[in-house]
Length: 476
Ligand SMILES: Cc1ncc(COP(=O)(O)O)c(C=O)c1O
Image 1: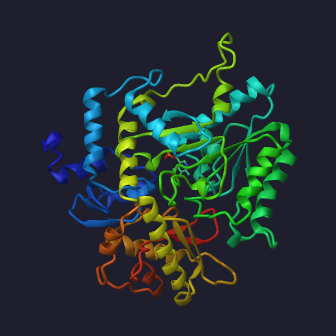
Image 2: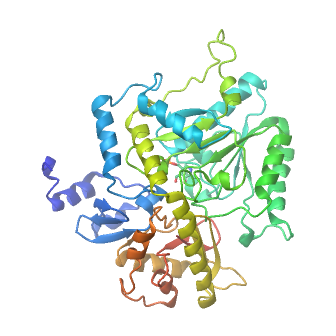
Image 3: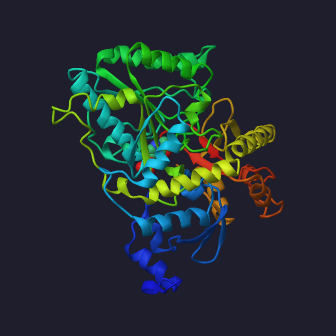
């Protein structure tokens, strides 16, 4: 590779980074005394940093993204070929990869028909909010403009997306936020809010209570993650989704499912909502759509919603007056098409179910050994172990969580720092996983709790020390 601007001089790279790059989600004071981490290469489930240290990437690129793993030449080739043919034209026109990916995607999403292309998960959700607001203006006489979101869910980083953040720590100091975003309670039974038998139904009933309090004619949309990801891997209890659907239908509320994390295989089905027989009005996706080989996000909706934006061509305000410059890049759908083929050809959905069951079983077995584990939960290759000081009080084991994080980092396992230190495993093949888990691959940990990341089960993970939430969590 050409030594462009000295990039083969790693010392110069680290210094340039330290001097000029503002890292995401980072307190930079630390880089006055330690070098910022610069990742230079990836293969399969491993990455190497600028100092040559090998890391097991237990976070799929840090944020649940590289679902099919690093170094997939066929995706790179598909992107390269596409870039040479046509790198870009605005999304007001179509493109070959855009059309073909939308067709393949829609085949996997019965009931949905239209794909709107964007750049990021936040943007995909913003499009939902804009569509809901425009529908309110044009079809409900200005009513049904409110958007309900759930405690502990996350929908992105822009100001409107943060208005719908169920994680307070993410939104603090960035307000004021736009009006009309209303929170409903989370459904995590481990942190019970109601002492009832049918918890799923009760947690969904709580959404109805909010609708009745706000006035059903003011509420246009409910947005939910199928399984809450960053907020602690919350798999909704039985009965929850059926009741949610019923409520949305009863009050004519559009249901938006945020599949930015769960989408494209993470939970062992193409989409997380498909575990529950849900019929959404909107589905948003980003991260794993092209496994990070190109930027792409999608807002997918029904023909009924789409029709509401073309019913009156004489009205100059009737159509969806939105544009996203890079939503027209052809590399995104080109990469997404190849990514989808890999998942199909290698049977990665079934693998995710198999590996997920295997990991979850092993994590549950660890509960007998470690009192610090308060709860184990997950679906597919998305799991959490919640660490507590005491199983009765469920007080968060914050220090242990931090210790595990530090030790994991020292041992070359990539996890994100607390409070959002989640392990997001790639949708790995069994062979990769077995290799990763070779015994004695790593040194023993000093603290008994740290055995969690050392024991011979595939869960090298660490934690969410949940600021703003109860409970520290180890997430696979
Ligand atoms: C569930 C969920 N929705 C939306 C987003 C925002 O996606 P992006 O960072 O691509 O804007 C995230 C990001 O972590 C997410 O976890």
